[in-house]
Length: 106
Image (cartoon, rainbow, N blue to C red; front, side, top):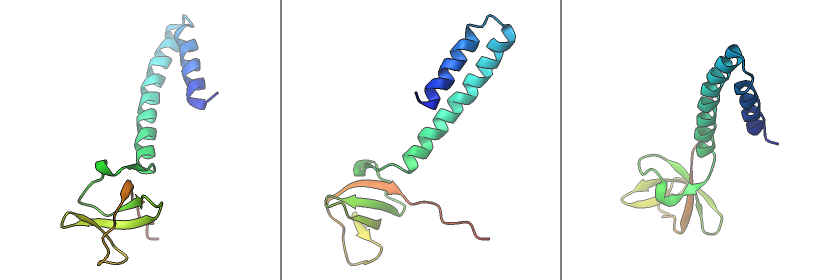
Protein backbone atom coordinates (compact mmCIF):
# COMPACT_ATOMS: atom_id res chain seq x y z
CA UNK A 1 0.00 0.00 0.00
CA UNK A 2 1.44 3.35 -0.99
CA UNK A 3 1.71 6.18 1.51
CA UNK A 4 -0.56 8.36 -0.66
CA UNK A 5 -3.24 5.68 -0.69
CA UNK A 6 -2.96 5.30 3.10
CA UNK A 7 -3.44 9.05 3.59
CA UNK A 8 -6.50 9.04 1.34
CA UNK A 9 -7.96 6.13 3.33
CA UNK A 10 -7.36 7.97 6.60
CA UNK A 11 -9.05 11.11 5.26
CA UNK A 12 -12.03 9.04 4.14
CA UNK A 13 -12.31 7.64 7.69
CA UNK A 14 -12.28 11.19 9.09
CA UNK A 15 -15.04 12.16 6.66
CA UNK A 16 -17.20 9.28 7.87
CA UNK A 17 -16.51 9.89 11.56
CA UNK A 18 -19.63 11.96 12.17
CA UNK A 19 -17.57 14.47 14.13
CA UNK A 20 -17.76 18.00 12.73
CA UNK A 21 -14.29 18.69 14.13
CA UNK A 22 -12.76 15.67 12.38
CA UNK A 23 -14.62 16.41 9.16
CA UNK A 24 -13.30 19.99 9.20
CA UNK A 25 -9.80 18.63 9.85
CA UNK A 26 -10.27 16.32 6.87
CA UNK A 27 -11.23 19.22 4.59
CA UNK A 28 -8.13 21.17 5.63
CA UNK A 29 -5.92 18.10 5.29
CA UNK A 30 -7.30 17.36 1.81
CA UNK A 31 -6.39 20.87 0.71
CA UNK A 32 -2.82 20.44 1.97
CA UNK A 33 -2.68 16.95 0.50
CA UNK A 34 -3.73 18.27 -2.93
CA UNK A 35 -1.02 20.93 -2.77
CA UNK A 36 1.56 18.28 -1.89
CA UNK A 37 0.47 16.04 -4.77
CA UNK A 38 0.80 19.00 -7.16
CA UNK A 39 4.31 19.73 -5.85
CA UNK A 40 5.29 16.06 -6.17
CA UNK A 41 4.16 16.11 -9.82
CA UNK A 42 6.19 19.29 -10.44
CA UNK A 43 9.32 17.74 -8.92
CA UNK A 44 8.86 14.51 -10.85
CA UNK A 45 8.64 16.53 -14.07
CA UNK A 46 12.03 18.08 -13.24
CA UNK A 47 13.66 14.69 -12.79
CA UNK A 48 11.91 12.66 -15.48
CA UNK A 49 12.88 12.32 -19.11
CA UNK A 50 10.38 14.09 -21.35
CA UNK A 51 9.76 13.68 -25.11
CA UNK A 52 12.05 16.01 -27.09
CA UNK A 53 9.02 17.65 -28.73
CA UNK A 54 8.25 19.31 -25.38
CA UNK A 55 11.77 20.70 -24.80
CA UNK A 56 12.25 24.43 -24.21
CA UNK A 57 14.33 26.08 -26.91
CA UNK A 58 15.75 28.94 -24.82
CA UNK A 59 17.71 27.15 -22.07
CA UNK A 60 20.50 24.61 -21.75
CA UNK A 61 19.18 21.08 -21.20
CA UNK A 62 20.28 17.47 -21.05
CA UNK A 63 19.23 15.27 -23.96
CA UNK A 64 19.37 11.56 -24.67
CA UNK A 65 20.02 10.41 -28.21
CA UNK A 66 18.72 7.22 -29.79
CA UNK A 67 21.94 5.42 -28.76
CA UNK A 68 21.31 6.26 -25.09
CA UNK A 69 24.13 8.83 -24.96
CA UNK A 70 23.48 11.90 -22.76
CA UNK A 71 24.50 15.34 -24.05
CA UNK A 72 24.50 18.83 -22.52
CA UNK A 73 23.04 21.00 -25.31
CA UNK A 74 21.52 24.29 -26.30
CA UNK A 75 19.49 25.31 -29.34
CA UNK A 76 21.56 27.26 -31.86
CA UNK A 77 20.20 28.29 -35.27
CA UNK A 78 17.45 25.66 -35.06
CA UNK A 79 19.74 22.75 -34.12
CA UNK A 80 20.69 21.15 -30.82
CA UNK A 81 24.41 21.76 -30.35
CA UNK A 82 26.64 20.06 -27.80
CA UNK A 83 28.12 22.47 -25.27
CA UNK A 84 31.20 20.24 -24.86
CA UNK A 85 32.00 20.61 -28.58
CA UNK A 86 30.39 23.65 -30.20
CA UNK A 87 31.04 22.23 -33.68
CA UNK A 88 29.06 19.09 -33.01
CA UNK A 89 25.37 19.03 -33.78
CA UNK A 90 23.54 16.31 -31.83
CA UNK A 91 21.24 14.07 -33.88
CA UNK A 92 18.66 11.44 -33.02
CA UNK A 93 17.50 13.13 -29.83
CA UNK A 94 14.56 11.34 -28.24
CA UNK A 95 14.28 12.74 -24.68
CA UNK A 96 15.24 15.76 -22.64
CA UNK A 97 15.55 16.74 -18.98
CA UNK A 98 16.15 20.03 -17.19
CA UNK A 99 19.56 20.65 -15.72
CA UNK A 100 19.67 20.54 -11.93
CA UNK A 101 20.17 23.77 -10.06
CA UNK A 102 23.84 24.47 -9.32
CA UNK A 103 24.96 23.99 -5.72
CA UNK A 104 24.49 26.95 -3.43
CA UNK A 105 27.66 28.83 -2.55
CA UNK A 106 28.63 28.65 1.10
